[in-house]
Length: 93
Image (cartoon, rainbow, N blue to C red; front, side, top):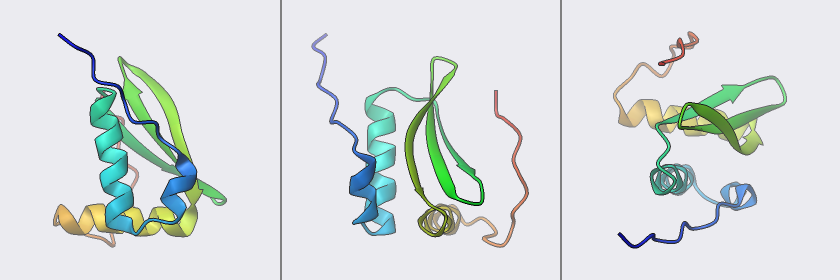
């Protein structure tokens, strides 16, 4: 089977994208590298986007807290989840 080259991922590109386009890029890249999970981890300074591949978590990008909140609200709205819910989910392993 021929290996398809994976599009490089530049975190800086996310800054200039709208939320829908940024999320599509993240998901597309995660699928290209066969990631099993996409993790969004926030602290007071930034949001870390990581991918789980073969049981190991790899950092993908750091984005602003504001952009991270918009991204998570977009995901929750499209999944018909409660946007106001802010509990921390357990690790899905």
